[in-house]
Image 1 (cartoon, rainbow, N blue to C red):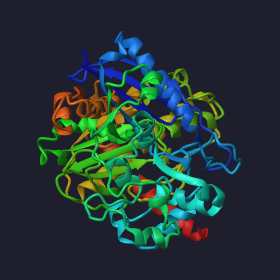
Image 2: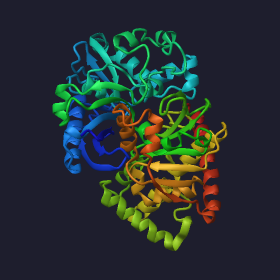
Image 3: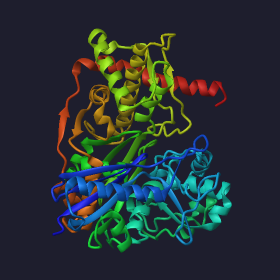
Image 4: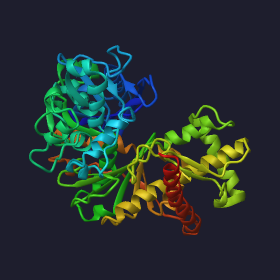
Length: 528
């Protein structure tokens, strides 16, 4: 009896797998770490074969946790970070590292080596920019490929395949060279609503006219959840499954989270306008769906069919959120290793201090959280973080105050994105949160109070659930992705904003916006 599916989620530091039933219930979950190589500033690399091995270990672990036989799995799909995998003409690994060595064949999504190339793309003024918020990000694939051709021309000459990581995983699983509508539309400057979708004049203008042919990219992508066929015998053996499991076209990890929390509203396209998905961990992605295109400067998109069929997606984000809080702990003299125990110790102490000082805790500290650039709504990868209000206090309590006010800055950044979207026709008043930030009670409180939204805390792993919806569609459990999203919907806990907090955070938000202006003026004075 084949009555279960597997969703696989590959993040920045690990691969996670979950076994789910027809209703979306998670029966078993497992995780396996992956390495990241950082040989230079702004360079970050993965080993795609290690990622595949981690995926296989996680799937086998999830099966064991669910006490499920692999023969029961009817479908599998993958989500992953938007990292770029390079392969040679024979499908073998091809290094993206200046150090050489075939192992490091994947440029991690957060790698910013292609800042200059991204600026060149923006300077073209090409109409593809109208569908990425007007500014090309170094986290997208076009500038990374430009960098490879420019700085590693011998690797470019040897290249035979370019994959977004989710598409690499479906290729490893099924042998199919299909690419996802999600990956190509969101990260490869493919216009999913037009025919032809590839704008060859744009790629020619930035020096990679042969990108599509060299990377064996298809003329058209495949819709999310489309059945790519069965697992290959080798993949089935490595995963602990059978060749009867169908492989579904996957998607980017944050987009899987958006599907997991927003998919339930697929049958109410007008009501979609009120809901925003926040997929928050190392970084944060903010996803808004609508029935019509809503171009928004500084926000990626609008992307057609990148989460749900016939829906448009606008995607904002913050490049460092959980990573920023980790950095604050490492950076401060009273900090140390930013593990779960240290975060809990700080959070507990913040709660104690607030019982005495209230929301004015650290009130003269103000933090712009753009330590890794501003993805949205300013679309400025060169932006830097700012801290105002430091003293000589190096105590643990001073770390706690700075941590709290950094969390406030992160929440105000979400508010900045939200207000930018609402100015373009959305009516967002509800924020659905999933990811690692659910474990941080300070952030969850602030997303309601500082961002001024009703917050729905996802009751479960929305990213794995979204990918499970994709697998269930490929397996034929549901006739389409929208029906799978409705049938496997996730419950959540609701938190309303505290009216008594609005005055404090409204004042903080005015300062937050003023700090953006002040930073720009300082940059101009400094010649930046």
